Image 1 (cartoon, rainbow, N blue to C red):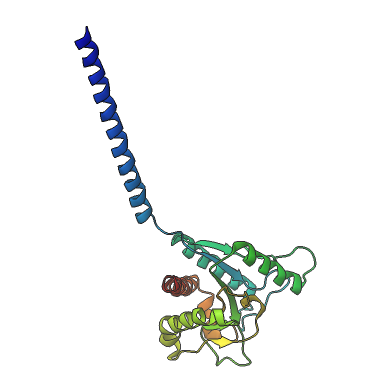
Image 2 (image 1 turned 60 degrees about the vertical axis):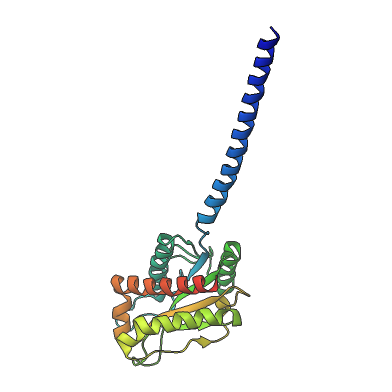
Length: 236
């Protein structure tokens, strides 16, 4: 009887030790698995705010040949750009998704700009890209031009302009541009790098024909996204 009880005690103790060892191993491997999972988990992609300039009762400039409204071209380009960012895993926030203004009722420019700023502040983005079209007194001016306001935006503006020179301006114009600093409300977002991309001169029949082509807008939006992604990867 004593031997049976002792044997049972030894068996119980052995099982307990084995169970404890198994738990310990499981914990260790569980911790290692969690660490491995964390090590190989992709980093969250940044948020980008895309601002389609003008809208509603504020059409912006118009095309010299077709009379196309800048606000419509801005929106089409901005939406395509947003889709490209989203497909690449970024969070793309638009300041407007339709042809209407950002505010209801009678159009007020100050209220419209304040609504855009509020969208930017809520989104807490890593960059802001405002899409516009340009105009000049004559048809000679053409190309894609980048504008910025703050010191925090200069490196993004430079990266974008250099890439767009290489991929868009030089092939079609034979020349490039430098980014231009100015006092632009939508590009003044404190420490958030913010730029305005003037995608074409609607006073140029050549630029107007290019930017009204969906394939050209897709190509331009793709190059904007590529340059911005490289900038964000480099700054990270």
